[in-house]
Amino acid sequence: MNELVEKLAADHTLNDDEYFDLIEHRTPEAAELLAEHAVAARQPIYGTTVFTRGLIEISNICKNDCIYCGIRRSNRNVKRYRLEPDTIVACAREGHELGFRTIVLQGGEDAYYTDDVLGSVVSRIKDCCPDTAVTLSMGERSRESYQRLYDAGADRYLLRHETADPDHYAMLHPAEMSWEHRMQCLRDLRSIGYQVGAGFMVGSPFQTTEHLVKEMRFVEYFKPDMCGIGPFIPHHDTPFAHEPAGTLELTLYLLSIIRLIHPHVLLPATTALGTIDPRGREKGMLAGANVVMPNLSPVGVRKQYELYDNKICTGEESAQCRGCLGLRMTLIGYDLAVDRGDVRL
Ligand code: SAM
Ligand code: FES
Image (cartoon, rainbow, N blue to C red; front, side):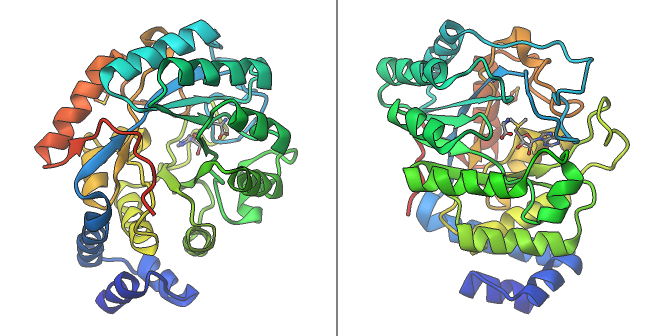
């Protein structure tokens, strides 16, 4: 096992059988060695600087019905909301005052946010905070739409591919959703010029080690600028309510592997990781992550953006979250940057 870790650290790649062995037969010792190498690979590029992104959850209205997601359209128990453009811009300004230099607008696929509406929000944020990167995470749209939003000033786009295996995708989504289309969106975003974030859930229902091997291959060939991975966590009002959650241990292990495959990648320690373990985000950093995404949404709506059960940070003000994460990072010897936090290639 240790030879595989050393090989990955040296070559940034393994063959499929080797990835399979590394993941399937993992041991605590291999995890420790992987994390050591991951931190060493990150060191010359990002050091112990942690990039922050202020996340504004702009709408929980969604036309999609992803089986795992708490805000899927079939969930009648969700109190739906959407933020008005003025509210979004005010949250972004507050974020800027708190030291955020990346603002992420995330939401369900809500038809209210046409290219005109969303584009105008993006350009208003760029006007009031010109030193700030704007990241969108608003799901699948047409190439023309992505182009218009890019022209309005958006810098980055996060669209998790969810799984690198089309058959597995079909087990997690209704038939009307297509893996091919999601992948096409990622290619469109990249060709337009966005910095692109992809990603997947760890331990999603039906996920096998073979699927995880495909995830590692995807990271190798697509080389996303950012890769958002976090544990799947069941939501009580979805058909996957009784499925087990992904584990901290496997998520940390995969974070380290991804850092070694692609040392320059931006790798968030996600809110889901902080939800399954009270020190999940700190442990994520120590496994090779370098990004955190505290919540900037108005406190009044936070509980309604419930993708999974027991999500953390739903009662805290934006400044509290920023302060809390700053302290958490200081305590492990890392520091939050006041910086756009672009990928360093
Ligand atoms: N609508 C946009 C999209 O589809 O990319 C952005 C919002 S979507 C809710 C953001 C991400 O939440 C998804 O890509 C998915 O990976 C994650 N997510 C949804 N339900 C989850 C769950 N039960 N556990 C963990 N992550 C979940
Ligand atoms: Fe939100 Fe700690 S990061 S309260």
